[in-house]
Structures are given as C-alpha cells and as structure tokens.
Length: 117
Image 1 (cartoon, rainbow, N blue to C red):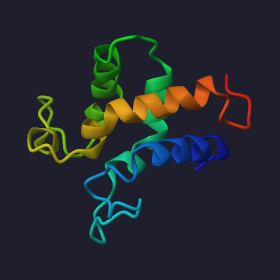
Image 2 (image 1 turned 180 degrees about the vertical axis):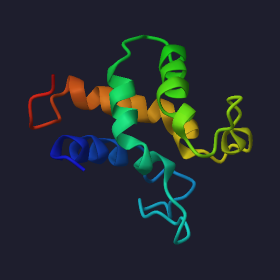
Image 3 (image 1 turned 60 degrees about the vertical axis):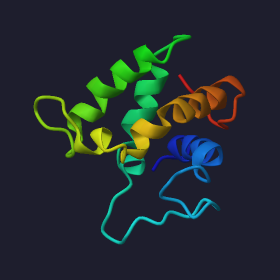
Image 4 (image 1 turned 135 degrees about the horizontal axis):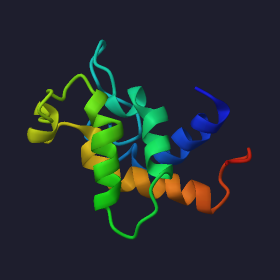
C-alpha cells in the first residue's frame, strides 16, 4: 500500500474500526484466517471512487461504488446481486457512509502529508 493509501486507511480505521461487526470493539479484526476483508481488498479503488464524487447526498457515492467496486467483487453475480449485501454481511456496504466521511475529512483537513491531486 502506498504512503498516501496508508494515510487514508488510517483515517478510515480511526472512524469505523471499533464499530465494525468483524471487530473486537478495540479495532482488531476478528475475521477467521483465510477470510479477506472486502474493505482492505478493494481499498485503492474505494478511495479513488469516493474522491471522484462530490455530493451532499449519499446516492451518487453508492452508484459509483456499485459501478467501480462492487462490479468487480467476487461476491457479486453478473446480474448485480450480492449475497453479502442481501444478508447485511458486507462491511463495505454497511459502513460506506462512514468510509466516505473519513476519506473526505482526510482530504478536507489535509490529513494526508503528501500532496493529493
């Protein structure tokens, strides 16, 4: 992960890691070995997606997420259905508003130490 992405990751972790249902409440992931955190796996594309949208409403962010990230996730079928979303088990879907907020807050407060284009 690049330094810039690590800084975004830190901002996102600070915002939601203790709230994640796959966490022990202290920010430690409790996913079983072999299970992959969808947020970590897709994080570069998530950051890119969030930064590509500017809106007061969440819907444009969700539309961009579905097109840019969910469409490439192994859990989504070709017809756009996702068993994890349906069962409320996708942490990305569940916490997306917090993730958007953290990434935008990082940009707005110059949280990142490197120049962001």
